[in-house]
Image 1 (tube, rainbow, N blue to C red):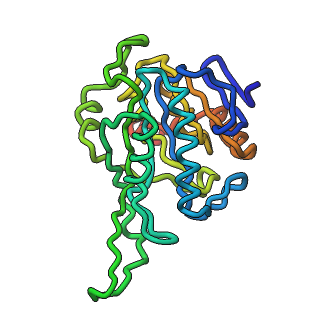
Image 2: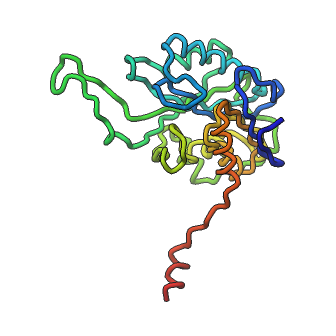
Image 3: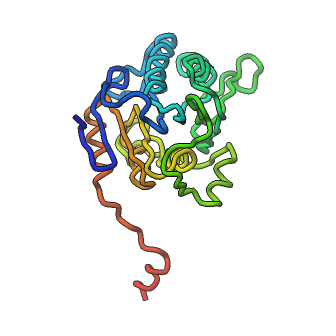
Length: 264
């Protein structure tokens, strides 16, 4: 049974590796940001595995997602370009290779510029060729598909606007990350990320899955764009956080015109 559900949204307190809450070949789009294995204190997940164990875990859950996706299913995978905590690792290249070996086909990579270079603290050998660190202050969204890239099923109703399409088909996206303190989760992504993926790669009323739901951001984007959203989350406290975010009424900020009229 779902932990929480509406007519169009469902949350399961479950593990993507073992869940039986979804039928195979049933999902139009998977949008997720999995644990990065950088020792974030999630609660129910060990985020400090050996790199080999982390890649084995990655292979398991991406295989499960492959089974759940429709033949025309797409996969938007938000991961780091590389990783330096615990040793330099080409995490994007390694995970993309794993996904392709499972059967996913590669479409493209979107660079997400979080504009966070000011937070950088590690330089390696300062002003020396001895051992400098090269750190790209970006993440990526790897776009994959199962069997066929061309989408022929669904409502055929797109809601993406012309200016959005023109801007988002440029594979460098620039917007800020999300505040951990504001959301109450140690590693949230901003709603802009799943919102763009959903509007770009699905039709209205398609089924979108996030196998690492966390604070519920992907379902918030589904709620906003009239998609059917399914989230799986292993930690119950984050299931509850997601429910709170999905059920809290949005407070509309007054426009400049309304504010001025009120003041006068």
